[in-house]
Structures are given as structure tokens and as C-alpha cells.
Image (cartoon, rainbow, N blue to C red):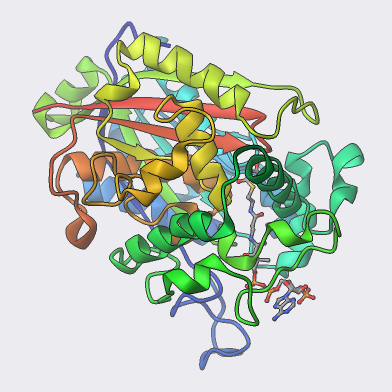
Length: 420
Ligand code: CAA
């Protein structure tokens, strides 16, 4: 969808993404265990809303509407009705229209697309915020909640860790079809940890890992699936994190810029989005992401770009193999060839096509509903030189985000253009 009324990204922020391995996250081994609690879903939502207002210098009074991305508030936190929860953040938000969007791990991405639609329909300044808390239960119990992003009655049984198993199935098919090796795939996770180590907001900011660790299973990198056919095709290092966090961004129209007193050059333009939805439990070919490809075709066409024009990418590396599948679905590599981009260093921060500069879902973390919003915030921050130790050497002109729900069942893609 190409906005008829131009849409500007004014700015945004993300809270620290936290969970096991992050120094602020309280669990059994932490010195604060029993003394303080981790932030709740409301805490992350509120921090993202107030932080985004503070970061952009926008007043709550100036917002027309709010869009909340969240997947599983009801199961992890016994909390729904998140529009009404969000407006508790500031009295000036009371009685404005705020509502929640759910599309599994693409909840933030579809909230973003819906916000763009609202700007076409008459709103001039909106906030998109995503938040998720998943650490209220063990990863094993949480895997059952996350499995609701699949066709639960048909797919839950693949493994207790349903989603990790679904992507092990993709890696099995891909490695068998194209001869890619676990040692090669390890470079994807290693890059994610390295980038996260340069990003103070990342879940894995302090967790140092070697390439060798990411390349093979071991006592400190176990294969944890029970499914005997898939067990050998996944280890902990291939997986995104079970994270808590929030992220927010402000979008506006030309009239909105006037209201906020902002210049075009302080913004990025959201040139186009593409959203595609595929039927649950009907993946025809595990070696490609056909729904992502459909969304990308629309987004690239409507933005008037090709893969060659893109300078930076935020892709949904829920598992290491997904990064390669996304590069191929978007046309950055032929099928079976994405490893060349990784192995050549092209996808590193200093490379010609940096991918997931802040660490992606494996390194920055994956608080599900926040992820699609965080991706847009990250591109904006790269475009405006705000990324500190993980800033790309060359200012990007065009960036693309890809946010995915389920096993490639919802894909939400945005194209951002830097304005100078
Ligand atoms: N040896 C053998 N097994 C071990 C082990 C070891 N040394 N250490 C751990 N395990 C196994 C155990 O079975 C353990 O479970 P129990 O303790 O309950 O028996 C299991 O691994 C998990 O162990 P931990 O709780 O210690 O693991 P962790 O906290 O480090 O978590 C992880 C690791 C399980 C990989 C977790 O990070 C995870 O689940 N990541 C994936 C999250 C996910 O699936 N997100 C959704 C992505 S899909 C998407 O984005 C699309 C969508 O719409 C859903």
C-alpha cells in the first residue's frame, strides 16, 4: 500500500528488552531474587508510551489515536483490553481512540499498517506501541501459549516446543535441499550476539558467545526438542529469546508535521507497506517463505524500489534459518544462496547490506508484540545516526522491515526512506 497522504516517521524508542541472561532480569540466580519483581506488561507498555513521547518531544495531547501490538497478554499476564490499559499511561490520552492488534509475532507490524491506514482516513498524528511479557512462566509453558500462533489443534503436537520444532522442520528441509551446513548457519547467530553486544538495550547485551559455540551443539548449547526427526536440526543458539519489553513510534501526515512543529528532514518517510496472510497449517514448501514474498512484492512495487536499492534490513530472525529464508523471499539472494551474503560479511554492520544491526530477535530479543514496532524504530535510528556503537558507517537511504506471524502465515513489511 502506497500512502496517498505521505506518512512520516517522527521517531521512537524501545525499552531494554530483558529476560534470562540480561543483568536487570530477576530470576533464580539473581542477587535481587525475592526482593524485587520484573516489570509487568503494563509497566512495559507505559514505559514505551512515555519514553516515545519524551524521545520525540511530542505531547500526549497532540496524538489523535493509538495502536497497540500485543500477541498474548491474556495467557502470559491475564490481561486483555490493552487499548484501555495503554491510556492509563497519561491523563491526556483518556477518551482518545486506542485499540489493540493481534497477529501473533506480527502484531506490531499489523498495528503499524493499521496506523498508516488511519493516517489515510483522516488522523494526523498517531502512536504505534508494541509490548509483550513472556517470562511469567517457564519457556516450556510459554511454548504452549506461543503455539496458539500456529493451528493449535493440528500443529501443537509436533513438539512441546512447537515453534522451535516448526523451524527445525524448515532447516531440515533447507539443509537437505541446498546442502547448507550447521557450521554455516552458526554465522547468523554469532552475528546477532556480536551486534547485541554493541547495543545497550539488547537482551543479550552482556552475553558473549564465540562463533564455535554457535556452530555446534554441546552441553552449553543443547538440542532440546523431543521430536526425534527434528531434534538434530535445532539447538539453543539457533533460537530467538523469550524476552519482555516495549517499543513505540510516532507517525504523522504533512498536517501532523505542522502540528508538531517538526521538519521533514528530521523524519523518515514510510514509503509503502505490504501485508499478506496465508492459511494456518498450509505451508506448501518449507524451503521458502511464500507469504513474506507476497507482502514484499507489494511493498517494493508500491515504494518503487527493487532489492538493489535497499541499504539496511530488519528481518524477523525468530530462528537463524529464518534470516536466510527472508533474504531469499525478498530477492536479496537466489533460493539456497543466502548463506553467501552471511559468509561474505555483507550482512554485518560494516557490510554492504547490514541486517539486524541491533542484534535482531536472537540478540536484541523478541518480546513478540513489540518486535514489529522495534524494527521501524531501529531503521529510523540508523537513518538519523542514533545507534551509537552499532551505527552503520554509511547513512542508509532506504531500509526495509519484515515482521512475521506464525510460520510465515502473516507477513508485515514496511519500506522507509530517509529524508534529508
Ligand atoms: N541439556 C539438555 N536439555 C536442556 C539443557 C541441557 N543442558 N538445558 C536446557 N534443556 C532443555 C530442557 O528440556 C529445558 O526444559 P525444562 O527445563 O522445562 O525441562 C528446555 O531446554 C528449556 O531450557 P531453559 O528453560 O533452561 O532454556 P532457556 O531459558 O535458555 O530457553 C529456549 C532456551 C528454550 C531456546 C528459549 O529461548 C525459547 O523457547 N526460544 C524460542 C522462543 C520462541 O519460540 N519464540 C517465538 C518465535 S516464532 C515467531 O516469531 C512467530 C510467531 O508468530 C510465534
